[in-house]
Length: 147
Image (tube, one colour):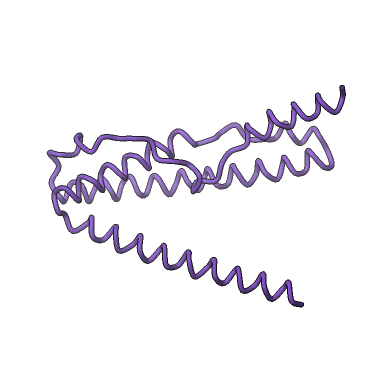
């Protein structure tokens, strides 16, 4: 009975942990609200939303890291540490901001604004960087395995 209770408590607490920012999906925001914006206004909004999104993602990632540390300590060493799991999850705010950014990007594409091409170029560079990082991690794992 005690094991079952501990398992249930662990499951509840694990579900309360914050997610990393890259795992949070964008909420749908209609691009129609930006149809009357000029390309300059869209660029300004993309900049504003992008800055706020980075700020909230940083808070979310820190919260997720702290939650994971508290969970690890609590499950292994000291169960009262489970009470330190942070409840300031920014998941909803970050999902909304990601959705707003996507809607602004769609509006920029529809209006053929230069900022749409710039965003696409940045995404391509980021994807290539991420792929290279994954390859490097794979090579490092192979080296460790053979040593």
